[in-house]
Length: 256
Image 1: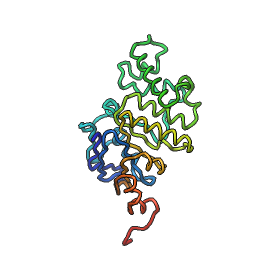
Image 2: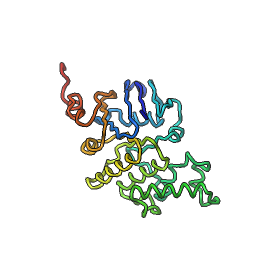
Image 3: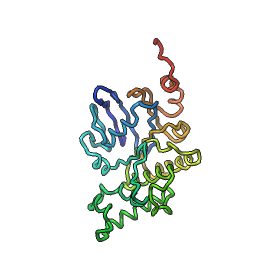
Image 4: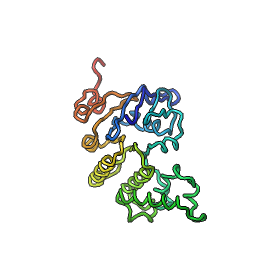
């Protein structure tokens, strides 16, 4: 297992966002996390990536306990992430945005990336630039490297964010609703891109509301509802699970 979530809980004030969620993600697989809005999916990603602290339980990645590690240290270990809402720097070019993804692995760090025009170019920066260009080519945006990120359409901004996550050469990619706002053709392209990443050996943990995409590409699906895991299995098992149907269709529970 590349990632193991052991009875993890998260409480905000008096609100329990996650309650004893347990999950194992196999290395080299595509594992989806689905559930209605407010089920706790993004909260789970925030705990894995270190954006928020865990209230209870443990998270292990490649045999190392993550609970006390800062986000940049988790990134160094090999966890890359995209966000539900695209987070790009509008005042920077596409290439510069992607280069920022690798700053935690460089000695020059974030300062050097932002202010390269006032410093002598280092070999490290050259390597970072080449790496960023490689991943921009991979997602199909190489020709747009010098454009301002703010000028790209929404779907391409999502691809920039994905390229930025890939610059860390992560073993595990957390993709939070990557198909949100994409049309069918763009979604098909994303599907092919995720398949290529997986073929390269990347493990993908995916949050997505597009059930056609999820059912077509995922090998394992975990279902959250009201902060608890209610089902897990392969696509056909999950699709036919009464608890999953109940959660999505809003049917009353038996005895209620």
